Image (tube, rainbow, N blue to C red; front, side):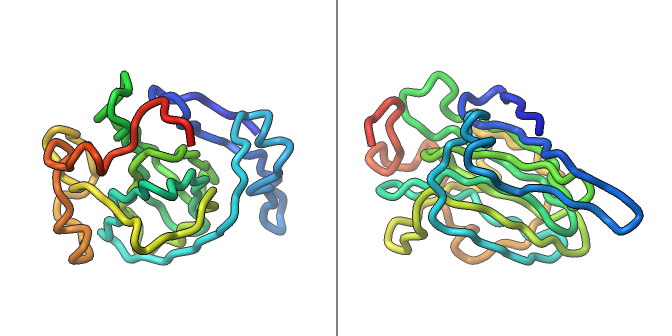
Length: 187
């Protein structure tokens, strides 16, 4: 596998080894010791799988008390996946990184805890999988607007399908400081 650093420290792009023959393909989606050398040493505790239709945008989500590192990939279809540094005091605060993930390119993205995460579906539908380093905690859900002008994320769609919750999230500059993770904080 090939692991590439991105402009956001701690966010990594992973291109797994894919073995292809006339029957199809095989790839490892996770192997603890290999990924720990990457360095993606997540102690993953929960796996999720979502299916969404074209134009759906999920995010930008984060948890504050139970922050989740996520290793994400697409089984079928294509998405534009985004990580945003929301750690107050971080040198890259408010910066984002996006990557096309698809069932064809088999690429993965690792988003560390304390980053916001979201994706939009570019194919008719997409099956999106992710491993999380902490459990989903409904009372610890936070988010920010997908179209926050301060972030200026170059989403490849202009009128996404959003949940009511995602449509009502605030912009980064209006989120109370106490509702944002702190850069360098010990957990």
